[in-house]
Image 1 (tube, rainbow, N blue to C red):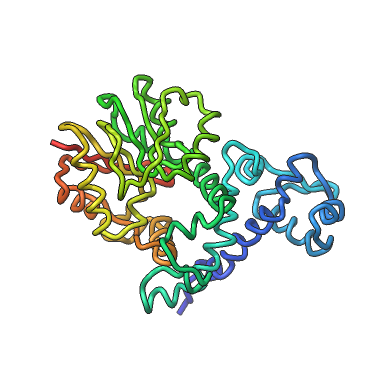
Image 2 (image 1 turned 45 degrees about the vertical axis):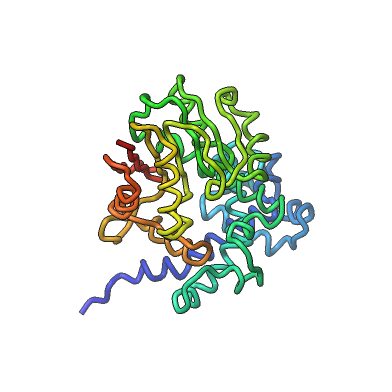
Length: 337
């Protein structure tokens, strides 16, 4: 009897080695340094404080992963590294990579305990109590790193999310927990008549203001400090929540949806940007992995369209529609009758 192909198992055994190789190269500033000019391992080692021979193995690994090229012993960034792995790139993902390396990697080591006991693993991994997002934003630098990383993801997802439905009927969008404003920017870019606001915690708004200065749509986007759970919501005929609902329990989501529903006028809408699970929860793999990620670091989980529809309709929304976007996040639109 022929044995099944072991490739899927072997690939998973090695998967964390590939991600950790990229994480460490980003953390050491390898791609930032090589963006200035190509270099050999010995030169690079002297500049970043590493040993030449071990670093050469890391650099060769990055070549094998399709991040660097090597010619005559000198290493240079490939375009994918220049775009996503350099801190100064407009589309950088380094913030989320550093967060994954320094925080998520440690939380995931306690996945077994999360399965046995339930609940996130912040105290177990870092010895800290308090609200979940106090851990994300424990220092200004940690908050900046996290938000810059999420901005990079937002540039990949938000244009697809705002294009998933025809939003031309709406006049004022308020993005709740909108962070650096990537969704508001994408919406204003697609709908020239639209005015928008980003509503987020005061410390987040300070960083959003820096990012917003770079946006062509800045004049049409207002930045408002507040907590969407405890403060009054700004006026809008379209609210948006992107990578927000998956952080929370059904009970907290119900509270927020009821609050949004009350604030909307008749005919107003709520746009949700989240990765949708298949109805039988058999996939897609990124959503399944993100749901496990939510287990170790938040109170929430990923959901199916049917589950979001049930929450939305319980709050009073109707005409709930979902769209798969092909981007890291999908889209759901619900209307107030």
